[in-house]
Image 1 (tube, rainbow, N blue to C red):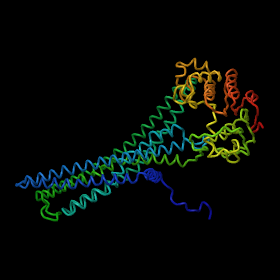
Image 2 (spheres, one colour; image 1 turned 135 degrees about the horizontal axis):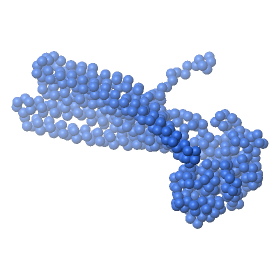
Image 3 (tube, rainbow, N blue to C red; image 1 turned 180 degrees about the horizontal axis):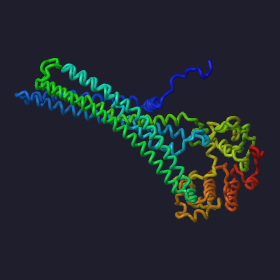
Image 4 (tube, rainbow, N blue to C red; image 1 turned 180 degrees about the vertical axis):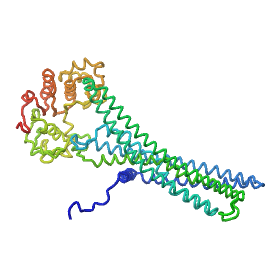
Length: 570
């Protein structure tokens, strides 16, 4: 039998995946949610007692000889049951809200923990903006499913059946009316629900795409201004917003359709019950009740039961869109979790370890996302030495830095730190000794002072000024509008690429790092700025730090103690 002939079973639809993922999400809170749902069911069923009390009082009042104590007892029972229903509903709502918040918080923590350990070379193409939208906004869209839809579904399964059984001893026609009108609502809701699921999924995808577009344009804002592409960017946003508007309106249209269908059949059911009871009480209908004729109390009781028969179904229809929206979020969450994922080494926690006297790579290999295998030459680097990694683009220079930092696992061989290999146990402690200077610097959304203190929280302003001087960056801070209190934005708006790298060098000076990894630190810089960056890197080495530089700059490479060459340049 060939592989193609193997029956792998029916493929899961997006609805199946969404339902399964929602079940996984709510499993830890299943006990609390079930308890809340049953409290809501009990509160709904207590209406039967209230309806009976009200029917007894009304029957007594129209009998011609009302009794004070009958009215008093009936009214007291009605009020007390109402208070009990309100208390049960409030308690159930508190439980479901707490369970929903706990489930969403757990999913956020899980997703953020997973993404925090994602290798920068992971194959998944989702942007950080899409992940942020899923974590911050979309996961919150599952709360109405837990708070409204699940309780409504439980009520819809139990309360209508209970009301039919309660009405049956009084009138088989009343039970038949409810039995016929009730099932029509779930049938049409299911048909509408299919469209709601698809519409919600399209809306969620468009929200993620728009967030990704926004982040990309913000990062490239300076370049867009330079090439005079702001008008085109505005048009792109306008088209994206219009697509989101259309998809959102389709979702709302489906939601209104489901509500309209429900209200139509609910109104018909209640109207039929009113017609039957009314004509029975005036003697025009003389059949359908087990005791002839139908009494006032019995008729009022049946009339009071009819709206509450449909109320759980109405609540279910009103929250049907909540299920579709939650399922769409769950499908996206499942897609993120099942996408190719390459974690970095370690657990992402703070750990301490002594600085090693020797760094070495032995038989080190790495497989690119495209499947290409890159083999690196062996090397050793003693504390305080410098190494240049040179070679054409695409030969794995940046990947080697990531392997040394434990940001991506090796396919074969190992990085050795002292007498131990770099692995899950040693990676967190090893990264405490590393300062990374990327080609595209990244700043936290804080002041420059806070960014420089990122790895040295106790550094004084004098320490910062000393670090800036060593990195040839004092003049940069002097030109900023608020000096060290300036916020540069994520990509360093207000400073050039070379200035941003010098600020990264200053941050490395402030840190206790004993090994510096610099990725193309002089790329795209003029000669004067490149010299300033080189001077700052060499100052770090003179301080006693080991320095590894991935570069195309042969002048910078010549200033290093050792050199390894990758690719065709070898």
